[in-house]
Image (spheres, rainbow, N blue to C red):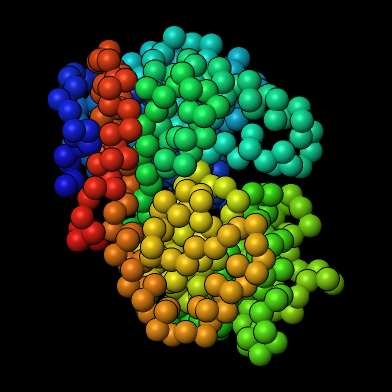
Length: 413
């Protein structure tokens, strides 16, 4: 319930007033997965009833966007030019923290600065940058070595680590077993924009803008990082029967700069439609108009686009054996992400079977009720309070995840 943030099945920590610094420098004008997490975490923390002062570190680009957070005695926006996720932040950010004197510091990515003494909570979104050797398009080995070192140092320095899925937790603990007692799974949710109804005229306007027909396209949303498996998805679409492909398109939305699968080319199959970056406000309609959403990733930290698609009532096709299966469960079609044939067969099944589509829509809407950013923010606040009060937090590792997935599916959205 709103305002009730005891997310753990344990005695509530002290609620003495804390100064909590939340590092939101990752918020950039073009929204990505990390920025989506930061925006929704802050928005939902603003709705919780608590006595704490939240200091939000932001870049100049995000200051105007987050102005609604500026409230006396609750939120302060701290503008800084220290770049996020750059080597220089490890030297420059500690001096800012010394000046602010927070009781708790929350860093939202894997490369947390460590040259300070503030008790730290770190969110590790995923380990794809280490798992996939070709993740970095330039200076790959050097960047991977740097990421491995700063991640190891960051989680070693942190009082607690949050991850969005059990899949990410398992990868993290397998690599660094000693972190096991300090890692909690805090799944994500979706912004309320995905829960609103979409007027037919508004839907039509967005689809017309991108040259698409309702339920005549498969949709992918994301980057072309290697783990996204775009080329195999494109190949799978190309292997659909001629009759299916003549009336269908594969719409690929996102900023693509890492590989050959960045968009249509002379060798691309007929029907591949590269949309480029799609503004966040257009995404609900783009999901809603799709025949199905396809995300055959080789690995994900969570898989937020699949949850967004289910929320608006679009069937999803995702990879088994990844966090996507954890999020989607039996509410979507699960494919072998290493098999082009498996992806093709799932696409063909959705395209040809209206009954299957209706079943997936019903199951997806029911499944997505298990997830909310309101719960994620409440869990984060409980963690801040536990760390800020100096309590032994190790016994609570993993409890958020157990609480979330034991929730009945009947919760109203």
